[in-house]
Image (cartoon, rainbow, N blue to C red; front, side):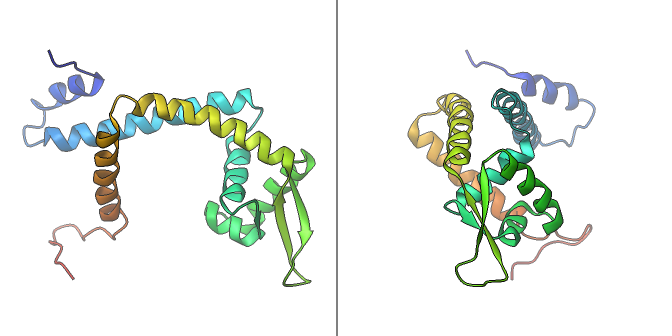
Length: 174
C-alpha cells in the first residue's frame, strides 16, 4: 500500500478547484517548499543550541568554504550582502574569538579574515549536527536514488538559473 504525505492531501484538495493543475508539478514544488521550511526550522533550533544566530553561522560557513581565509569583499559576495553588512557580522564573530583580522599577504592596504581554531570547531560541531538531519531524511533513499535525485534537481536548478521567459512568449533555444 502506498503511503501518503501532507502534500498528497493538498493536491487532492486543489485539483477540483483548479482542474488544469498539473499534480506532479504541484507535488514537486510543494514538497520542495515544505522540505526547505523543515530544514530551516531544524537549522534554527540547532543553531540556538550552539548559541549561533543564523547569520553568524552563515558567515562562518562561507569563510570555512574558502579554506578558512578570505577578504571581507569575498565574503560579502559569497553571502550576497553589502560589504558594510559583513563588517558588523565580522566584528561580532571576532569578539567571540571565531575569526581574526590579519594583514593581507598581497596588499598592505587590505585585511584578510581567518577562521580561528575556536571558530572552526564551533562551525564544525554545528555542521555535523545539521548534517545528521539531512542524512536522516535522505536515508529514505538508497545511494542510487540519492544520485538520481541529485541529478534531477541539478537539471531543475539549471533551468532556474536561466532568466525566465517573458509572460506570453515561448522560450526559444539559443
